[in-house]
Image 1: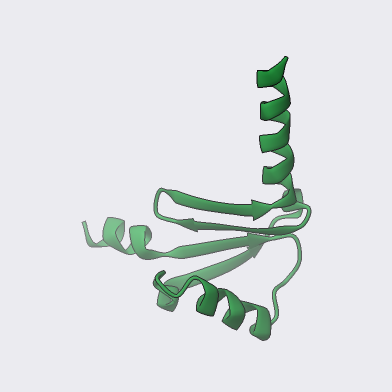
Image 2: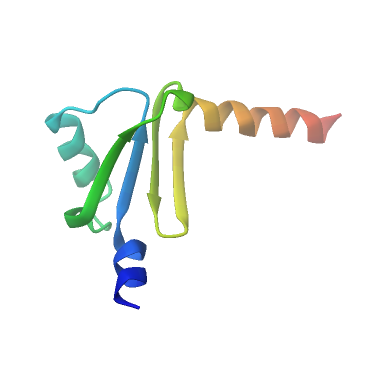
Length: 79
């Protein structure tokens, strides 16, 4: 149960390139309501640009890939 709780509180940040300390601090400040004590930063080239933040089952998608996917879905709905 403790392991599940720890996983729910972990912040996972996916980005196309490595984030430096100033970028990490800016993220922590912008999303201050998240528990940044247990955070993991990973590089994922499929993100293209921007970041994806995952906390437990919640996802904040601020990536170019996510924006293009939303646009594609909108275009299919219009057709």
